[in-house]
Length: 238
Image (cartoon, rainbow, N blue to C red):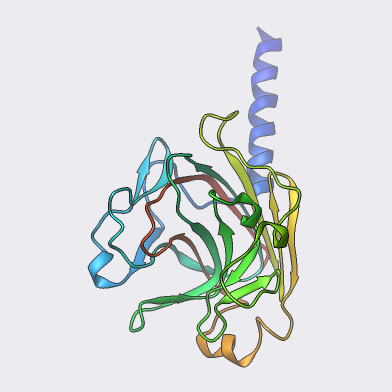
């Protein structure tokens, strides 16, 4: 009996240590407490974002008549490590993403700041960085002039699972340090972006983004999307 009790104790201590290493959970697995929808008035009450099966779920299937709709944290973050799991579904196309150091302009109905792309229809894009800041609005890692990215321009080595493939979940990690943003997808390094001269330039200072701001999950305009996020942990450094 004592051996069993010690085994349980060591397991609990180990789990607590792992949780501490990951930082603080941003999602309680049951509610959207700590999050809120940022969108134009016409889209705020359409319930695209909810909790289902213990996951933050975005469901716009059959409802393409919408603008961009973000689910945003109530707190701002500067330097941090962010880890989360993403699950996509083959029958659902559409684009999502994780905004970091971003800020919503109510008057303009826009969320300025860099976004780590999540694009299940073309996983080679996932983990790369698109800057949604007005006055920029293009890929910054890799550096491309617009919103398009061809397979040869994205990751040549990547792993992605849809629902029903293995456990169906993908691990996305984001590290922000000063003007540097790094990303990993399923353990593979994707972006290592030195944003000095960009994330701290006049355009980003004008919108107060790039170095500090909110985290948000994106529903892309006019997309028919079904996607889930869970196990969202942040370790704050500054």
